[in-house]
Amino acid sequence: VSHSALATAKIVAREEGIIAGVQAAVLAFKLVDPGLNVSLVKSDGVIVGIGNVVAVVEGLALPILTAERTALNFLAHLSGIATATNELVNAVQGTKAKIRCTRKTTPGLRILEKYAVRVGGGVNHRFGLDGAILIKDNHIAVSGGVTQALTAAQKSVGPLTLIEVEVENIDQLD
View 1 (cartoon, rainbow, N blue to C red):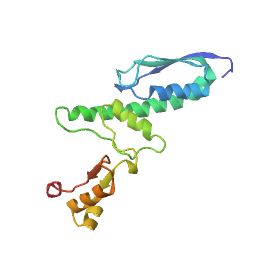
View 2 (tube, rainbow, N blue to C red):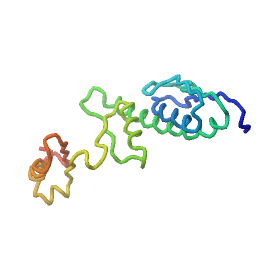
View 3 (cartoon, rainbow, N blue to C red):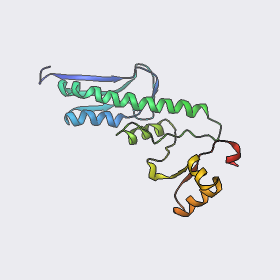
View 4 (cartoon, one colour):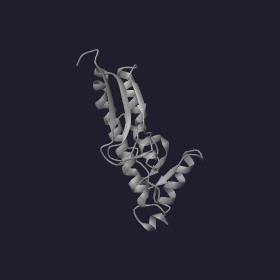
């Protein structure tokens, strides 16, 4: 590709879904060439159909081609998360259930993937192990029961720290 060749590229949705990650895509283009003109047609949270234009990129062809795969990967991955989350949110609509994400995310992409969950209508769980206390079966066994484990955890942290208890049956929940 000639270093002086100009191009106009359209990012077009290939599937129906919810867009997420447009700013990550813009950044991919701008990091390669700050002179590229990226015009967003759709924003995060918007439902798109097949063939809808999401963005238009204008400028030198070589940097557009260099950045396009990274930009598209961000858009596809994050839009997929937002779309799948939204399907689950819709499935529990009318109930008190909330769709929460895990902290177990793709290395280096945690903040983006958690953002995509919110775009899809989900709720973020803790961002790391230090964001809350999770009492699991091994803690319950060592402590002598759910109540004892919960009491010990409450004594070890401040009043604003979230404490969650993982239970295996209704008796433990009671």
